[in-house]
Image 1: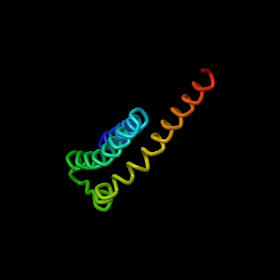
Image 2: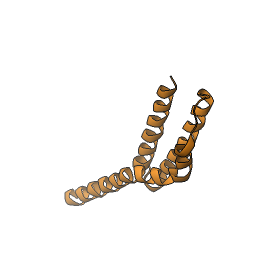
Image 3: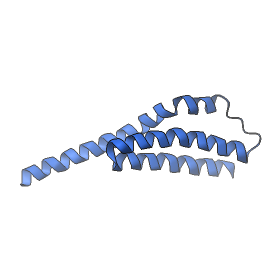
Image 4: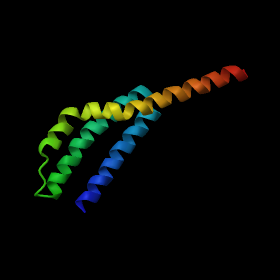
Length: 97
């Protein structure tokens, strides 16, 4: 049960951050990075509450310290795809105008 909740939270966090980075460009990239960072910490806290034997240890420290870097590495490709798609659309519009 705890693993299912953890997996659902992580899928929601990473899916939501990817959507934000793609949909809202630079502001979405920032929001996606923050979502991954705080979402990782929140999922760790939920696991601590649900499973008394769970100890975050080094993984918890890594989520806290490097969550922003992981979020940036995750969201940057979606931001880049957004920029590339906008440029392609703009280029096609110039050709047909």
